[in-house]
Image (tube, rainbow, N blue to C red; front, side):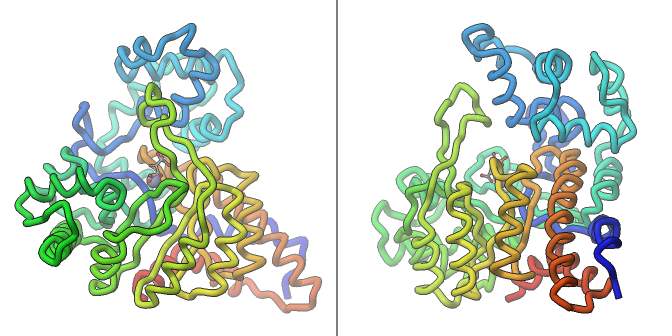
Length: 414
Ligand code: RAT
Ligand code: ZN
């Protein structure tokens, strides 16, 4: 029988050894382009250091009144990385989660993180072959499969799919179509221009043509689920209910809703422009109740929505809460949210996804998340021992597998 004293090391070891199926990232294989302004695969030092989380942070260190946005965006990527490095890593202590992430990543790659200049590291990354490097990063992060986000209304990505993409077994596809639900006037015009017979009104033909569009694109990207990100005020929509959910049900794929993002509050920050807000869990429960043949992955951006979402999941088996999303992907919040979810839902949640935009981030996002989840589990197992349960190593291994991989794959299968 295990003892409480053994738990911290044992849980850590088991979580580290359990490969992850990462259910939501913004990563791409090299077939989508791995260099230059058009490459969709982001990787390496300059992408790491210019991550949009760090762009937002550098404008706190050096405000736009002193260093105007236009001046920042006029620099090339390496110059922006140097600016961020100087102000967030050299002249200040890199304490924030996004800063610490760069440090963890460099250390795990065997690179000295405490440097004043990025020049020599930049050279090291230049020598890596992107295709081989993916393997190295996945091994270091112990990630076995990367789920992409394939934005069908992004003209650039769409063009690449239409030109023909050879699939990469390390990556799986997800069809993402925010504007179909949030901005039908624009999305509908695009569909019409792409040859689908849709009208501004949701006539029968429009509905069946929009379904044809979704089906064709789900086939093209081999979508394992469909996804949208929604603003705090989202409740539901006719398009969602008459087009999207029926297609997902027919294809037997879950629908992922990432709720609570408010886009572009400070557009000057570009990718870093968005913020979050309190959303409605009642909107989620209403959909779960009225669409029992659909399965919903749901993550919410507001900390204040998390408890109600976990309670909702107790009521609906077709609801799977996942991840500590974006501004919640910080150790203190992962701790709080994971603890609360486990107390309410046992092992039936997906505690985390990486949301990595830059390949190398898999290394730190999963390292930091495994640590945070491990702390919670250690405490929970210790409480269980105190309560009298004869906990075994095999049980901890089974839980780690469910949390990091199994729950996602099982919910996909339905
Ligand atoms: O977390 C992020 O990096 C955000 O910018 C978004 O990509 C968000 O995760 C989303 O999928 O909309
Ligand atoms: Zn995302």
